Length: 160
Image (cartoon, rainbow, N blue to C red):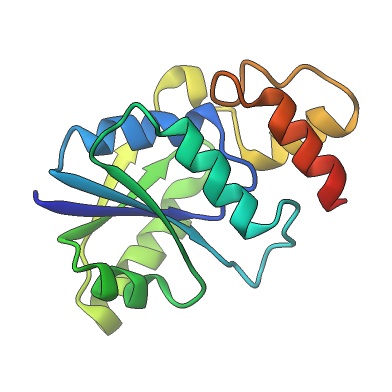
């Protein structure tokens, strides 16, 4: 595929996100990673800072570009001219939600979805788990991209 889109809130970026980003970037000439605004979620790190954290995390992936978008996923996909949207699936209940989203995106926007199953090592990691561990002063270094632990903790402290 020429161009894929991986979108999410990335609040904050985790090793699970990076697992999907690395694997999806190997499938396409270009992978666009979009920091999206989800009105159903309370943001903890400002979107501009999430973009910067992702750019740093993806610095060694030459075919990855990080953007910010505040509309519908299908609008982002159309504006970016992608062949498909990539979504990661964890074994803890993601399938139903992702299936519904993929069906709606195809129905109203003609956008196809590629589902990648998260690697076992990342299956239990989510942004909310990272935020909770960080809030209690725990070590998040194995759950976030290398070298970003302190920056993420600082960003979470400023955001709360």
